[in-house]
Length: 356
Image 1 (cartoon, rainbow, N blue to C red):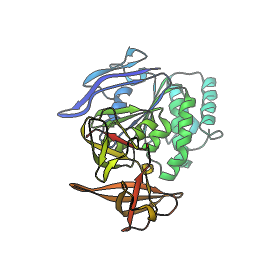
Image 2 (image 1 turned 45 degrees about the horizontal axis):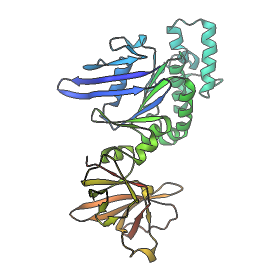
Image 3 (image 1 turned 180 degrees about the horizontal axis):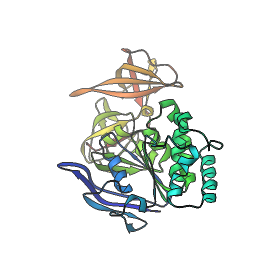
């Protein structure tokens, strides 16, 4: 089932929540919608589901205008952050709810319930009470209930948001696989970059009620459309640079050799911003620190991440405030907070974008 959002706007009084949003999703494609709180992503999902009427624009499912069609006639499956399971029904009763509403024969309901419970890893849980399930098990029941009626369009609103970080991380890979196996076209709304990247074939980045960029995860990570999208997508140091007419880049510490950083086609001559992901820079050994072109800074913080340490380095910028750059230290070579450090750019890993 394909989905098309055309010029959708939503206003609540004088407040504009969505601004002329356009989006196309192909049949059986899994698309993640990523954005901070207040970006309009949940409102967009509610408009697609028919839970919120747009102020302007329309929603088309398989080419049919469903803007005025009620939710239960759109053929969509819904799963929300709080799961909204029925505590007075057992697992099978919850999963079967949508099938009963569709007047599916009892024998078919039983077969489908068993099928989806096995799919989500809960075979044998039919008679379990909801109160006796863990958070992860409840999440799986909610997903099973959403996909049991075989919706052509599945809408997920922060499906892992109520879980603790350890459990959410453990379920991420499973969720991506389950969404693919469901056979549905999927819209997955989340504020978490890891969730968006784990599930979405493409990721829609929303900002202030608008679609800022739509791209596959690897492209968003390496080639954000601007610095604000770069920050939404993940940690980055944002350094002011100058680009001349020939495309040469000059950073606050000097000229950057040709080919070391990539320049966006959107960048024009003049001021721009260099996006440096944690893996776009590396610490320089002590005997190399005086070489020309290196960034010199001070370690301001360290965060242990198990197999590596993320180090925040503050680099002085002439004519402006210091810039913080995240660095991955896998060898344990970077000193403690307050230590001086020299960095070099990893060729091809930095990306120059236009000013916001």
